[in-house]
Amino acid sequence: MDEQKESLRKIVTTLALKNEEIQNFICCLKQSLQNLEANSVRVQEDLESEFSSLHAVLEELKDGMVTRIKQERASRTYELQNQLSACAKALESSEELLELANQTLCSSETDGFTQVPVTMAPAFRLSLKAKASDSMSHLMVDFTQEREMLRSIKFLPVPATPEIQPSECQVCDNSVLVAWSLPEPDSKIDHYDLEYRRTNHEGPPRAREDYPWMVVEGIRETEYTLTGLRFDTRYMTFRVKACNKAVAGEFSEPVTLETHAFVFKLDAASSHQNLKVEDMSVEWDSSGGKTAALQDIRKEKTRTSSPMHSPARTAVMSPKRAPSARVGRDRFTAESYTVLGDTMIDAGQHYWEVRFDKDSKTFAVGVALRSLGRFDQLGKTSTSWCVHLNNWLQQSLTAKHNNRARMLDCAVPDRIGVYCNYEEGTLCFYNARSKALMHTFRTKFQQPVIPAFMVWNGSFSVQTGLQVPSVVQCGQKRNSNTSSSNASLT
Image (tube, rainbow, N blue to C red):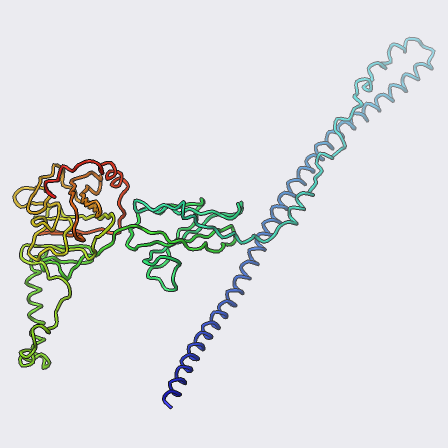
């Protein structure tokens, strides 16, 4: 019976899920019908507007050509009428002269012959060539080609789907160049829309992603460069679509590119109690230790006042089995005002930057082994390497390792870039703004290292998700065969 009930429950659950899917699908179909109606009205209105515009252009063209014909007709009519009037007057004058000449010929008097001005008749000075032609053939039109062109008007085709070319894409200096192409040239393409999304998963996008799509619209070329990026994920996914004046095509197949950036967070659980850690920012807090101690005392009082934590119960509990309040390494204490990153470096090349208050009494940045003691200060043991700023008596900037220091002959920047090449045992510090090299440690890391920071009476903030800058990579290649001047510190 129980098995039958369980089987029936499974069927009911499956059917309920199926009903929910059908309901969702019905909602989608209803929405599609509404969208269809709205889109049909929109495209019909657009079509009527385009034809109205076309009619307006034809009417304007017709009015201009009709006006030209009327002006030409009026001009020629004026010329021909003037010529006709002159000819009529000349003919009338000539007839009068002819009549006078004939009368003179019939007369017996000889004196009248010399008084008839026949030679002065206007007819002899009149041109018998028309001043204007009656032909209007130069204003004839032939719209055969235009008619054929109008008959070929069709709805705009949906643009073809572009294809992103991974071999042409580049990821460097926290910028991404994305390049794509169309299967065939299309002169009607107006622009492209590019979408990109951060992800920690390689391959095609999943149904649910942690980050939304970001959009870049109106791209006129078949490539685009995204600049000033912060790569806080391992990958970025891209897709692009082509658009003409009326419609957009389908998105291309998504392409996922690896960012090759080092991302980590600060381990607040093991930081010194006088350090106030908020996300990637750290600030010295002189009351931090006292406040934390008071909070621990209050928690202890609350815990012991509970019946479940009475002295009797506590007394019989074995110390070996006592629950630990914190998993992982112990907090840094005493004068080790240190906070570590939460991600190990055991391979590859990595780069991060730190912006710090130059008025801090003491500040240090570098790397350390995970085994760095809770009382150890950066640079004073063999398990840490750092650049150290001291503002106690006078300002000094030094490179420290194994309790040995080297003064650095450079101005104190407000932002330091850290480059670590684990395989080659190279740890470099740069002026993050100018990318000028400040110091290089050359060693051989026997264990994984971790980003490390220290501050006293000051503050700093860390920026991760950065690629190794091209300037730094080029400098490393040039110096790969040279010996380090700082070997005494390694």
